[in-house]
Length: 415
Image (cartoon, rainbow, N blue to C red; front, side, top):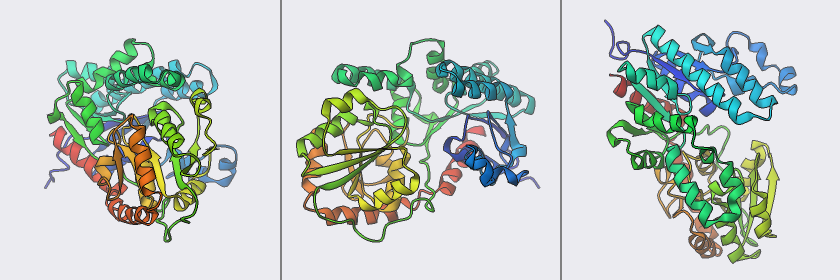
């Protein structure tokens, strides 16, 4: 006798790289709902364990970043054109064009596999556009995992921010959504409007979609998970001497609310707070030079072990972002027992209660940030207790919980 799950038409999933540790296709595979994953690269470690050798890791190839246990390589379709454009993007200076072509190649290959296998396409945003146009013409289901908030919403937000903080122009114009309004941008905005079902990792992502005309009936929210083995909870409080010990993990750019954080630190001064920033990639050097604060320390490309140690030793993680699809670091910090200060434009409101497990402030509000920091400078034991409660709270947001939500979403919208 066929079960309800077995009667559901399986999915073709599509994404590039090892985004979200392949948790969406893995969620489908675990319930026998995956026909194939279309991607640019996947390491068949299940068939060739030697790919995880130390010899290869020392030479820059870490297979674990392109493989997840439970997702058989036999369920993966690698597109040669996408692989070529992915490689070209890494070795050339024309990364945006290479990225666009890679995304388009994946979308078209996913469309081909969907039609050939008589499946339902469950695409990550950025890889859905061309395929969704054809599937809409054929009146077939089109399911979308919206990674970031709606690109049109982000463009409007960043354009406003450019007028508010002209000195942050470098990092604002670096944002993908601030590029030219061309066919590629039109396609990205069209993905959500063409989808017959959308799932995102935060309520803010859902809000951005609804603001751009997407029906709430089509949207579900499933927060990401945390691998708690990588982020163990601390067992003792940090030292309570000197200024508040703050940590920031992420790109030092205006999308992360950089100017508002620096303005708050400027108000407190070196005796009030010390900020350690763990970052990689592009930094808004002009904005950093404008403030040039002595109580800000920058660490480039620290290993995860160093970041976790810093979380154990800090009083508060600060992430006053203008916009995040989720912000994994919020959940990771909570897992270690570190309370978080963030905004309502992240997954913070989905993960914890304001002033019980951390703090939710409005975007663009340096005064609100400095007020909280000043308030708790002499009440650090309360921050530690907040972190302990937050660590217990975040335990329900593990990856199996996320995968269960993804599978349920697919079953609901593929029926």
